[in-house]
Length: 447
View (cartoon, rainbow, N blue to C red):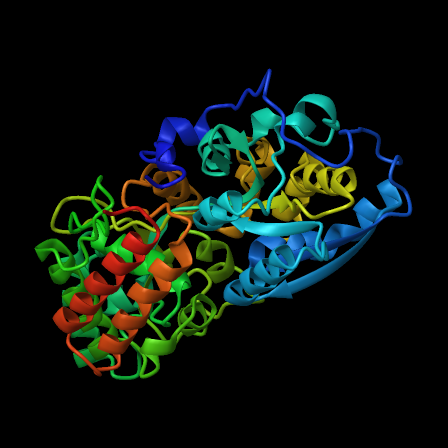
């Protein structure tokens, strides 16, 4: 069975309930957990980060941490596949280069089973600083950072699926906000016919595991799951074939000409620049699209949470945290950095100074400052949609296996090829079914 099946079925109550951790079992470490902000003065921390808006606070405010602790911080930032490769190389060669790493929830089974991350429970019970308020962190996000009852990361982002559309374009063409996948396909046809200056739709299509959330999230609305409860691949099920045929149609006929290679950054740029009329991706893009320094469509965006033929929402679950590496020789200093990152001071600055409206802190989201900021910036439509997006968050469809990267790359590669027109969707899914069966058998998940 996958390492962390227990995190399936994350609900709104789980996301909004306060977390209480007490009496946690501890993991092993080379140094006894120790508190004290100046206890590690002179230490140098090397931090390996995945690019994304959630690290802007670290980049901008790391000097605050350095002044408070006397610890020097060196940041390295890469795209997601490269960041993973850097961690794998460091961990497998036992060089101990990095003290802290980005930890996407979908990579945790792999990282934990390989022994690359340090459990944090003992640090919480023995070395908790006043920076850390556990009750501020959404419980669902914390659970997604937990494997075999051990916490391995503190979440600095939590994301659900969201559909973005140009309100001004839809009003001009007499279109209603899309509520279903059929609505999206119909709107794409109308926009192509009547607004030839616009790309009707944009989304991720690149042949890497970073696109898997888009594709499986779309398929979830059709009642399709990539694996059943017995770990058997379901890539060529009728539901998956229908879902991917619709998705590939959108990407091939109504998306940009480079749709088969679009990463999350590139897909978002198409919408933020005003080139595209619709986009399906993560709720995290709302902050970017409403930022006048990053977007040309501020104030023109509508937000919906469409469903598919099965009545289920289009999903895009993503949680990411910061973890301490097992190979670090500075685990206490690294743990202090994690706590600073999720402190009330840092997360409130993310809202008031950086304009991040999906800060994963219940303290911030429930604050008068948050309500006032949303009203002042005119983003109340987004901030009202955000918790609804989180309510839809579920791990029911997610492949929690240590082989996630192989699974994701395999699926996304073949769908990308179908988008490019190199093969049909049915041909692509037949290849995926064969390859995933082999991967699961080689890993011992199937007999």
